[in-house]
Length: 335
Image 1 (tube, one colour):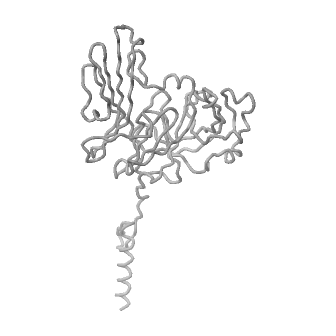
Image 2 (cartoon, helix red, strand yellow):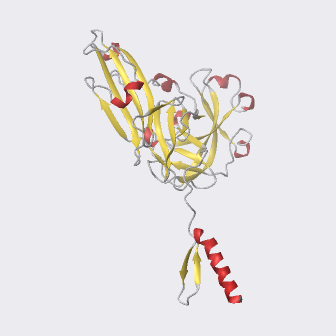
Image 3 (cartoon, helix red, strand yellow):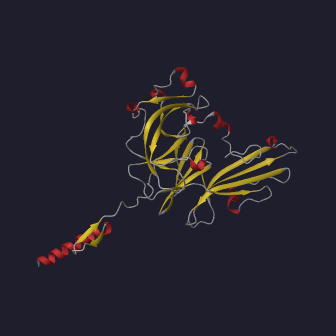
């Protein structure tokens, strides 16, 4: 009877452990349990997305990056007062002061995504700066930013596809990757629009040669047929003028998402006009990141009609304001 009860207990114990462990026998016949590594967590349900901005834009030397921490309210800003508020600048911030300025818990690590479809690397803030930025009085704010110590090399500034972004969370988001836009399709003046975007592009009286139209699509696709892209179309009215900078132009930019199993894409609204990347795991695409002038937007794929989460992480410089309009005009192409 004792043997039977022990056997039953052993079987029940094995059944309880089996989903989380594997068994193996030693040479002497005894059984040992091997506990596997952490189960793949995948992408978080509510990602705390953290953007980066260039050091040079903040006025600091070097070609690296600063990670956004907080926007310091005017009433709590001890670094820029009086006339200093009217111009750009930066000042070092003591680590003891960062929490009262609105910084998140510095002990929670950042998981930085650099190149496309790579595993995120761990990073922690290492030095803090108060950065005064903004081209106009309305835009000028004091931002709390930080340098980071990262366990991977980040691409230098200069390419949107290499701009880092991070998730702030305690545990590594194993299995969650960021796919960046790597696919490009362009249309010449004499070519029509792709059939899947025509319902989103208004008709224009645009007859060659006095009126031309160019378009461009930049995006990414997934193995299950999901696609995300930003689509830009530019109309150009020549009116007999030869210099492209004298042409009247009109630009339309939108972000399109074709879900799994869909025949046509849907337009993502209330977010940015540039597709930044898509967070995905073994269950498919989970979040779409779009970008606009110094703001990042997080769209939840499972809730396409919900407003995206907006993350304001810096303030535009004079140059940013000058080139914010995307266009395919030969006068000056901006991306």
